[in-house]
Image 1: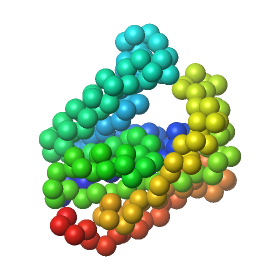
Image 2 (image 1 turned 45 degrees about the horizontal axis):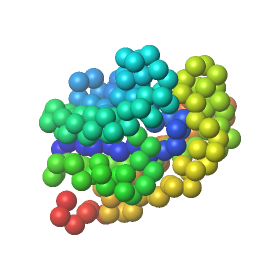
Image 3 (image 1 turned 180 degrees about the vertical axis):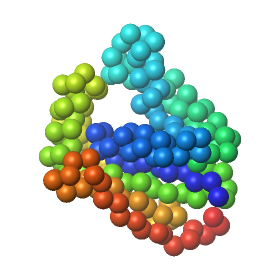
Image 4 (image 1 turned 45 degrees about the vertical axis):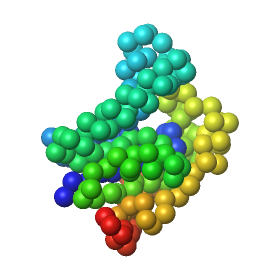
Length: 181
């Protein structure tokens, strides 16, 4: 059975890092789709910043994301959707495109705010994209936890003990079967 994994979490929570590890563990059997990939491609092509690319090409980015998502479901591979996906509406836009019979797994990245702020600060200082603290607060206020009907199972990723940086703790929750799914 094919699987779609819908990542959910704030910027800097570890979604893309987790995605890279997931794909590396399954060469040729999984495919990832994410808006950030498209934004970064456009920024590089036009030699502009991530923020400039997002502001300039947001409609093109959304259209290309939808195209890549539709294509991913035809590749006979599991699909990882790497976006923030903080609201039920954002997740419906993805889940509404999932072919019938696919297993739907929600992957929630739950990270304490101080650790998240440190990660984002370090990323910005290293030349990566910058997320303003006010935007982070705004995004956090929009978080809507998934309902049991959205996914067949949930995987919650939390940082491991402070003594072992980079280690994650995984908590699994298998939802009751969806009607008609």
